[in-house]
Length: 403
Length: 230
Image (cartoon, rainbow over all chains, first blue to last red; front, side, top):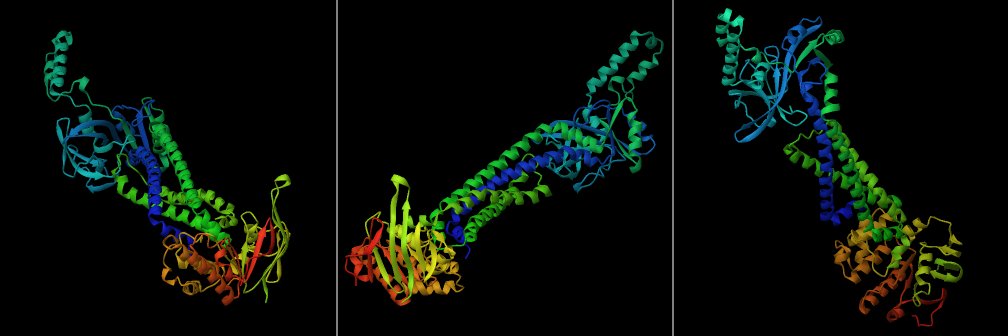
């Protein structure tokens, strides 16, 4: 006869209630671990999605995610010419906030190097990759935009052609991928008035100089709609991504390192920059919070187990007096602790499945969490039952005779 | 007739020095199998201490206890596995029935059978409940049973392993006179039908005619009672 199950059966409502309470507590612990894992994953997902060997950014910066980076577009062509480089791609990254259908959207725009990089490295869940250099974008599903829906940016509509999942920045903002050209258009959107004013300023300057007065054709050139004023010249890139021959990455890195206007990072270094800088404090905070929550859960389980045992003191004394083997009585406490742990974890798991997808921040239940959390739960309840077990050992069977 | 239990020169003292209280003072007691005996005496006379010593729960400081002719405790030292002795050969009945609260009436008896190593615990539990006329309450939890029913189940539990000795500590204290007598008669029936020795601590003088022998304790000493027995 299993005494633990008999006791649970007798007090089923209270036991289930206790397990549900424990489950809620465990779900918070798991959620914190999931948010922590999600934060780490989000911080590196953008760099990993690009699958580049090397990242070239503005000299002495830790861009493009940890801080702003501006590179002259010519760096792309220069990098392409380095021996060992198979492909150099322009890359842009910027955060924008727009209103759409009455909701505020915070979007991290990532520019892909068209036509070499239409987004083949992105894990699409629906739709397709970019098929034209302008007016299309791939967005993360968390943005809430549907396939075929259009978003107006810098006065022009951009149609959603593909959806990704979990493409988020370290700040939790959803990512939209478009061509580098489009991101530049959005980032450096100039109103017609600004363009006209700049052209007029150039004409006025020409009229005040001998050069302008001597060559009137220059004034015509400045009025030509195809001409772009220097102040409105080609916007910079955030980075240039290099795909190198696998065995020549170090060689390419050494070559580019000698350039005066760029800093080069490997994929791993770029991820480290993000983890050690952008999300370091948040990681530490959540990490500490997780530790405190785990300890709190352990103490609460310990008190629950102790109370469950304490209220059975007389029953256990009687059973001891009847000569119950010690293992049966210890098993009563231990098996209940395990059952509580299993039920509690099941509740936490169900809560996770139902509620975690609704959290504003991504809760990433990694394989490690999936494996460690139930084992840790069993470990905690086993450890927590030690006080109960010790109480069982101390119960004097003679106390059963004392009424 | 074989002796179920025999205590020789059994003594026990609580505390030390000026605060020492002699609970058992050179007690000699023999209970043959098939005997139902009452142990009378005022509170603090040492009745419960004697029950604990004879039940191998709290041994005396000096003296010897023989169980079925075998020396099992000498001067407070166990010479046998006392838990196993309790499991297989002893039955306890308490003032309150002290049934395990989370087990049904039948399970309370069945678990005692299990502890005693019986493989047919369920069948035996039903038989005993039937014998004590509470079989119809086998699925009830203790709190659903009346005081008399609880004591009957407790007696069934005490009988689970066909014990040689049943120790009952004021088993009728919480019962009215009718139920009290009924329980005492059950003890007599158990002793005579099944050959167990039964020692009942009681303050209830209304049913003393049920017992084969009466003992009285005072200040830790035991003597045959002046009350009339059957």
